[in-house]
Amino acid sequence: GALYADRRDLLLPLLWGGGQEGGLRSGTENVLGIIGFGRAALELAENLDANLTHVGKLRSQFLNGLQGLSCKVISPADGAPHILAVSFPGFRGEVLLQALSAHGVYVSTGAACSGKKGQLSHVAEAMGLDRETAGGLLRFSFSVLNTEAEIEYALHKIRQVLQELAFVQGRRTR
Picture 1: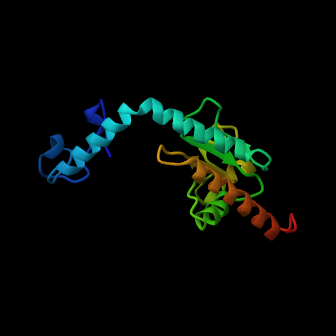
Picture 2 (picture 1 turned 120 degrees about the vertical axis):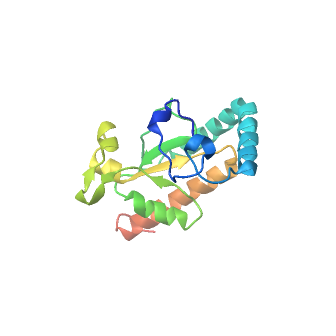
Picture 3 (picture 1 turned 90 degrees about the vertical axis):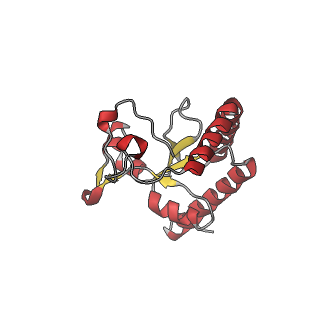
């Protein structure tokens, strides 16, 4: 990774000693890592428009696939094309995350609670989310490396997991 900071006075070294990286890092620089990062950044910059178009199509495909499910899209329509926050009220985000992960679909949960107090996080409050919506929040991220087939697979597994969990909760029969 890389870090760009326009205020050097805000940065402190993680390890003291040595003088590498302007005194902010001790140890030998990872020259191959630096070169690889530069090359990756160059490729991404050269293909930025095509990448954004591709990721936007995947996001649209995913949104269309969510139709008919009991979920609430939290992300704004004009939000970042590679991230989508979706709540599944009545289901705990952590339970959904684990169930989807077992099928190879990797998502993140939202910042729903703050610590052991069970209170909504400041992020959830700022977004105006109620406890049930925040508790069922998942964040889906799309990459230029993802395919339409992977989106369909994820949607299939989401439907399957929701149906299985609803059955376990006694909401539906199989």
